[in-house]
Amino acid sequence: MYGYIIRRLLATIPVMVVVGLVVFLLLHLTPGDPAAVIAGDYASPEDVERIREKLGLDRPIHVQFFTWAGAVLQGDLGTSIFSNLPVTHLIGQRLEPTIALSVSTMIFAILLAVPMGIIAAWKAGALTDRAIMAFAVLGFSVPVFVIGYVLMYVFALKLGWFPVQGYKPISEGFWPFLSSIALPTVALGLVYTALIARITRASVLEVLTEDYIRTAKSKGLNNAGLLLRHALRNAAVPIVTIIGIGLTLLIGGVVVTESVFNIPGLGRLTIDAVLRRDYPVIQGVILVFSGVYVFVNLLIDLTYTVLDPRIRY
Amino acid sequence: MSTIDLTASSPPPRIAARAMDYARRHPTVVAGAAVLFVMALIAIFAPLIANDPMKLTPINRLKPPGEQYWFGTDFLGREVFARTIYGARVSLIVGGAVALVSVAIGLVIGLVAGYVRWIDAIVMRIMDGIMAIPGVLLAIALIAVAGASLMNVIIAITIPEIPRVVRLVRSVVLSIREQPYVEAAVSVGSPLPKILFKHILPNTIAPLIVQATFVCASAVVIEAILSFLGAGTPPEIPSWGNIMAEGRTYFQVAPWILFFPGLLLAITVLAVNILGDGLRDSLDPRIARRM
Image 1: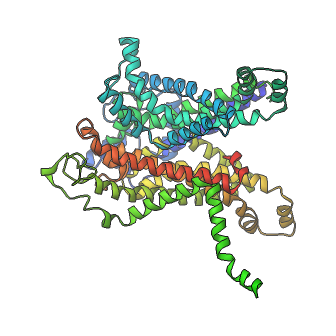
Image 2 (image 1 turned 90 degrees about the horizontal axis):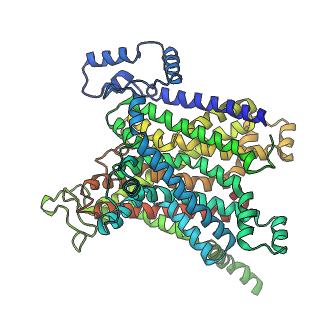
Image 3 (image 1 turned 60 degrees about the vertical axis):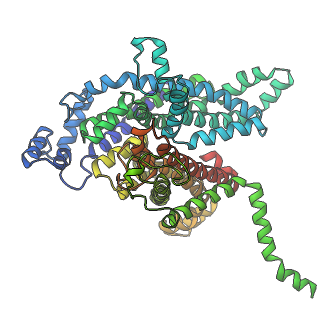
C-alpha cells in the first residue's frame, strides 16, 4: 500500500517533466527568433535585443531550460512582458473566479449526472433511459459558448432572472455571487454532466448483472437500497476516474465560459495574454492548469483503495 | 431455368435488403451520415447556394432575419446566411483533416510503442505529459506562437488529439501481440514491419474508425472555440467561430448573428457524435469497452 503511494507519487515526476518541456519548448518550436516573436511585428531591433537579454535567450537552450525549470520549482513563473508584474501575482489575482466557477460546475455536474446515470441504468432500454442518453449526446455536442449564449439570451436578457455578464466575488454576498455564476455553471456543466452520466450508466449497468445484486434482490431489498448501497458503491471507481480525466474538458471550457460571461478569471488572463503575445503568462497558466490536472488525478488514484477495498497494491 | 433466373436477379435486392436491415438496426449511423452528407454538399456548393459572404451593404446593417435576408445581416451589412453557409467549409476541412492526420500519426506511434517495449516506456510518458495539458489551452498557445492560419489551426488541434489515438492503438496491440498467430509469424522470422502492418494493423481499424469520428467532432468544436476566442482561423475567413466572435458585441441587439452559426455548429457536431456512437455499436460491441 505505502509502496503503491510512493510509486504513484514518483510517476507524476516524468509527466510534469514532459509538461515542463512542452511548455518551455513552445517558444522555441517556432521557425525564427523567439525574441522577435515576443517583440511582435512592430518592434525595433533594439527592442528585440532588450527582450533577448532580459529573458536570457542569448544563452544555450539547455542552460535556458534548467534556469527556467529551477525558477519554476521555486515558485517563480517569470515576469509578464506586458505588465511587468510577476506571473504568479497575476495568476493569484485571477484565481478566485476560476476556482469558484470550476468547483460549482463540478458540484452541479456530479449532483445531476450521477442520479441521471443510475436512473438510466435502472430503466435501461425504457423511454426514461433513452431520454437521458439523448440528453447526454446533446450535452456532449453543443459547444459550451453556444449553450452559454442561449442561456444568456433566455434567462438574462428575456426573463431577467440573472445578470447578463460579469462576476461578483463571494465577499459581496453569497446570493449575488451565486446568481453571477449560475448561468456559467450550467453552460459549462452540461458537457461534464453528459460525460459523467454516460459512464455512471455504463458502470452501474455492468454491476447490476452481478450475482450479489440478484441475491440482494431475492432477499427483498428495495430499489433505492439496491441501487445506492450495492450498485453505486461498486460502480464508483470508473465514475471517479472519469471525473478526473474529464478535468481537461472542464479546464478548456472554463477558458471559453469566462470569455462568454465576461468573468475576470484565469481563462480571461490566458486569452488576453495570447492577444498580447505575453508568453511568460501563457506558459505560467498552462503549467498551473496542467499541475492541477496531474494533482487531482493523483488524489483520485489514491482514493481507489478507500472506494474499493478489493483493490490492493 | 428458374434457378438460373433466381441467382441472376437476387444479388441486387439482397444488398438493398441488407442495407435496409442495417439502417433499421442502426438508425443513428444513417441519420448522422445523412446530415453530414448534406453539410458536405452545402460546403462544396456554397457559391451556388449563397451570395458573396464578403459583400458589404452598409445601408442594411443589423437587419433581422426575414424574407430578403434569411439569417439577417451583421454589423457591416453582410449576409449572415451566406457567411454561415461558407463557414461549413472551414469546419468540415478542419474536422476531416485533424481526424485523418491524428489517426495516421497516432496509428504509427501506437503500433511501434505497443510492440517494442523500450520505445513504449518513453513514448507513453510523453503521451501522458501531453494529455495532462488541457487540449484547448495547448492549441491556443501553439497558435499564439505559430500565427493564425488554417494550416496552423489544423496542426495545433491535431497535436493534443494524438495521445488518445496512441493509447487506443497501443491497447489493441498489447492484446493482439500475445495471439498464437503473431507468435507463429515471429517464429518463422517475419520482419518487424510485416508483423506490425500485416498481422496487427488490421485489428486496429474498426476501433480507429470510431475514434476518428470522435476526434473529428472534438476538432470541429475546438476550431470554433479557437476562432471564437480570436486565436484560430484568420478573422477574414468566415468560420462559425469567427462569425460568432464578430457578433458578440451586438448580441443584445442582433442575437441572430450568433444564433445561426451556433445552431449549424451544434447540428454538425451532434451528427458526427451520433454517427460515431452508432458505428461503435455496429462495428464491434466489444470495442465499446475500450473507449
